[in-house]
Picture 1 (cartoon, helix red, strand yellow):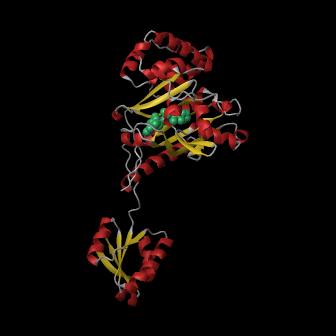
Picture 2 (cartoon, helix red, strand yellow):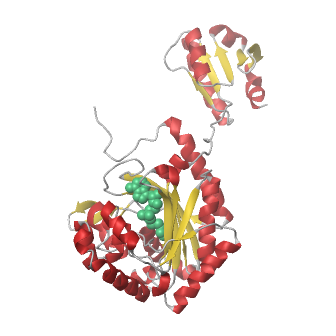
Picture 3 (cartoon, helix red, strand yellow):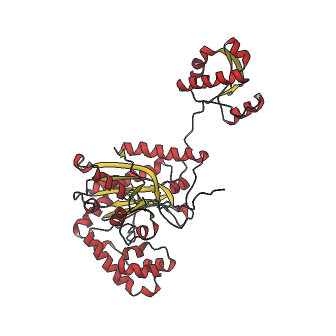
Length: 412
Ligand code: HAM
């Protein structure tokens, strides 16, 4: 028998109610903030991600699902931000909107070692606000993320924030780190020894125990921030305080993607073990320009839906509990039944029948298992008299009604 690909998941009907509840809450809350949905393809040119996420990042070096198509190299998108910025420019949204708020829900792909909360196909609920560098936008975006978490009934989450500053500040931070880490080089894992040379910020989020110990001993402060970036960060923190949003400033938070600058943030949850980040995001003020667009800022975040579901207590979205279950007895009734079902569905009444030629008793059991509110019984006799038996499953009463009156009866 075929098995699903490692690191992918089948979302079975018993689970989809939870997915729908989360997605519905997200859509409602995004519209409170005037975000509009965008849907981009799951497949993009691989070079889009090399260019934006950075060639030395884990994702680009090790985790891209690549597809060779003659001369072209495509990738299954590992994240949404790069695709949305590509689409924003390709569709000239920058020409028609000085500022735009977009949200997305969909699958992402990373060739990672699967474990609890870490998949190769996972889903993002995310958003991007493009066109402004104002600190009030950072505050609004973080407050939107925390309102979403409340909407998803995720409790006990933590918000960590940091500022990476402008590209020049990031360089200073890298230099400071290099000085601090050089003397510990031999104790770092082989990957971090390389990172020391080509992407030192990545050392800060290495999961190796020994590397973590070394990083903990570093005295990191936000002293590398220039005046402008420092006051931007102050404004963000003051704004969050004014909204009563609790956060921790975490100078070691640098995020795994190259496009970030200034504000970065992460949401963690205590019950998720080592994969405790339920969402993350930040500012990317050079990304649009890097892709050939105007020099404008952007900020966004994404939640991992599978991790949200592990942390959420939101009840599942219920399907209609007014299901009508039709049981037919005999061949003529069966053909009349298919027309009747069609008619009921045209009137917006959810209905179902038995497709297994079961006995009346077994079909009644099936109706019960399907949580039907009403059962209709149609036999040759009923057909001749132009009536149908209607059983109300909530009180087990049964009566005969005229076929013409059926939709009226079921609608009330
Ligand atoms: P990210 O931190 O790479 O950021 O991913 C966001 C969230 O996706 C993570 O916090 C985690 O919950 C979930 N996630 C990531 N990888 C996996 C995985 N392999 N399995 C399950 N869940 C996973 C981004 O992707 C940025 N694009 C976020 C952003 C939007 N920044 C600005 N705008």
